[in-house]
Length: 394
Length: 99
Image 1: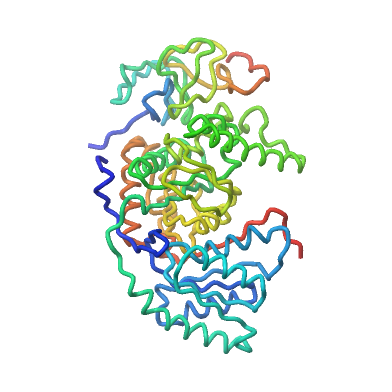
Image 2: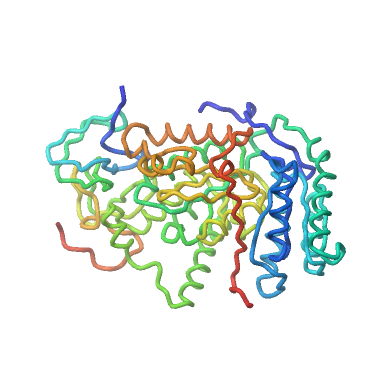
């Protein structure tokens, strides 16, 4: 991988806020769970179905302790650079209008807001959404793919269903690819606060400034406090018995294995959940460990490609981010071929090295950015989950 | 020809490697990413760590190029590196007895 910063192989869709997308979707985004089905029907039945995406969720308009988080996720999701136009469908409430204002404030793009109140019925609303898709279609199609710089890449790093091989195969190989992107001027985001507990001092030592290092220590301390508040001791003295039997000796080692998705690059900053990086570099984002909540937070932060390492296999994909699955072991990659894009299990088989698989992951990321469909996209996986700090009040 | 390695060296700064198969006493390992021939001195279960160099008491254990803990007793080259001779840097509990 002797690539230089000036010979980018990426192509994408340049947005008016300067961000780059690697897909060009029309997003139909329901702002109430009663409209999930309507959004899905439009996606399925409109002739342009191939470029329409939609989500479903459980929110029904509550404005409570989690409102700031929920509002940020909806507005950020709607303006993800992989989206060319967004059609919000709602009931017609001030809360919905606030989401709309936030989205418009951060990106100039075709945004439509259609409500049940104005339409006067579900069927009429569905008809209006269908017409609205047809209306924005030429605008979206007029934005063409063009050569993009390496800095266009905002990579999300994720793992789920980890196993004893994650820390020695897929994660370090992904770290090689992430390091290369960061070196070339792109952005990469590590997340999952609970996963770095025990290694936070080591990651903090890689921070570009003392403030960033302290911020890494602080997000983990906050997480620990919230856990001990619930009376659970998660840190303990050692990794679990199963981890020790598998060969893991210390908690630092276990957490380093998860954090290795982010290679060895220095940390440029720490992001709150669903907040957007402002300059290139490697970031840590404070997210829950839940795969889909993490992926949804990435989408709201302008992440445009995610690489997801998995030991047990998972179909999870995002409605707006191509999600590349890397298997940690050959057995699972062979058993679940339609969920997996790349097998890093060859490292444990002894037939490939971490560097070799890292180079393959890098090439796969470039190919997917340039239009190659991932297994999750081909399977139609469009998971979306709102993350709540305070639980559901209803 | 398919090359099959018996160890993974995760970073060239590491003083340990991961066994990809159970390593038996007396096995001799020659691999491009190991500086010199390594003789296995104790059984190493698959997925467990083996010392690539002599590690003195209190020396750091380096995996992924980072410090994952330290030796609480000296570790001979080619032997098993685990909870019987390594402890996390922030753990204050008494180590387990020797193997």
